[in-house]
Image (cartoon, rainbow, N blue to C red; front, side, top):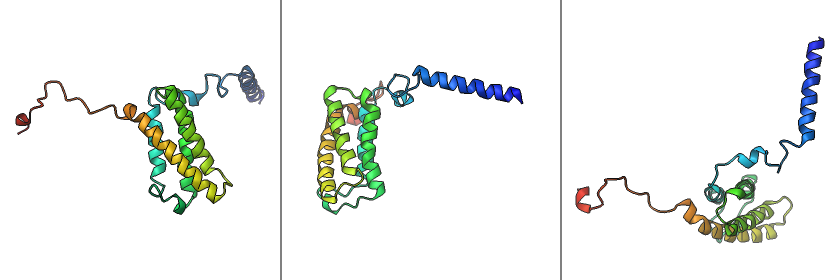
Length: 160
């Protein structure tokens, strides 16, 4: 019976020592979320989150008729969370600033307790900022046509 108690005590001491040393804390460089995503894919991830949110929204111009269900609020708020995870992977300062602005509007628009009139206004602002971000990220998301394999002919006659 003494061995399990010693083991438990030893694990407790190790756990407390790890907590006291500051290792593994948020923002200290060891945070698992900082290495959660692939390097350099920030634009792809943020544009994907915006597209995911758009799938739940009514078409542009119909914001006044939008029902703000839990699914809608969750999907739009995901844009802010994705932007936060990807901020180190965005390709430029301008894109980072646009992503942060877009995320703030997404978060504010979907926050609990926001009056409907304000929510609609914030949703419109979010959509404007999200559209700008998608355009800014476009060259990084789809850099151009896929190159033809080496040796492939480009002439129409070869395709016949």
